Image (spheres, rainbow, N blue to C red):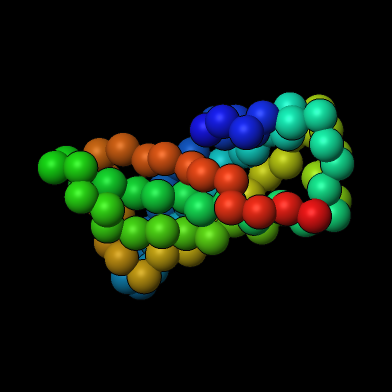
Length: 90
């Protein structure tokens, strides 16, 4: 992902037309954050963006690994790939 963050173990589940993504994110940025904001991007087989899930992590200290969970209204059954980006933090 870059910026001193990495993610792993992202898995998807769907129920009643709503999908969720659960995974872990690691802070190796060398900074502590009261909160950090990320975007989890999901792409279909052709590489087109089909959904963006917001991820907010509170009290994120350097060296910590924290779990996250984010929801999507789009069906993610055909997801081909994911990407995650750091948006901002304080």
